[in-house]
Amino acid sequence: MTTPRRRARHLVRRWWPVALAVPLGAAAGAGYAVVSHPSYAASAYVLVVPQNPGEAATATNFAQAYGRLAGQPQVLAVAAVETGHTRAQLESLVHGTTSPDAPMIEITGTGTRPQEAAQTADAVARSLVSFANTSSKDTSVRLVTLAPAAEPDKPTTPSAALDVAVGGAAGLLVGALVMMTRRRGEAAPPEAAEPAEPAEPVEAAEAPVEPTVPATPRPRGEEPPAADRAGQADEAGRTGQAEETEKMEKAEEAEKVEEAEGQPGKAAAAKKSAEEPPAKEKAAAGSGR
Image (cartoon, rainbow, N blue to C red; front, side, top):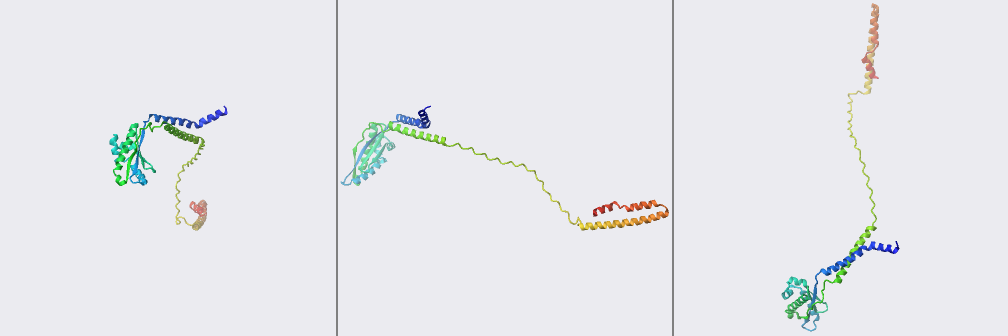
């Protein structure tokens, strides 16, 4: 593909929102100009004349004041009877404009037809002149109609050229906003995936710990001290030896008697039994050790 074609394709891909929105906006403006109802405007001019020469500044100030009264109920009430409109309708159809340098008031009337616009402006102008001249002795100025309203040749609204221009400008604005949004979306880097947070380790269920019951200490009175145990063992050993010695002596005496009587067997058995200590003495001797 040649370079001019690539550039053209790049321009189309980049500027297509503007290229599409501007014609659509202009077409919408032209459609509004076609379907909207025409409105005509006509202007009548009233001049404020001072009664005393050299009071032009006073006439200009009164022109500013009477220009504000052009849309007030006391002026519109008389004009409403002449035009057939209500006072509320005239408030939206008529307005007055003044100049800071000249004692002149411009009264503009609007309507759906040229004749209606001119009649409305003239009626309000005559009503304003009549209302102001009732107090001319106090104000030292008089109002006169300078120029009656003329029927307009063409409507003031809608204006096809103006509506098309406004529609195209609105389309340009919308297309530029769309293009900027697309460029921001393309230029924004993809957001890196956030690392997943490590899962918290699940603690193993701990085996229930049996409470340790402290061993009940043995009272000191129940267990004799080591020295007492050793003394008891020695005493038991001496008692056993004394008993054994006594048995040995008795056995020897019995043996002598048996020898004298001629029966040595019983004395020998008695002597043998006397030589062997009983089981209780053996146990006592073991505990002594």
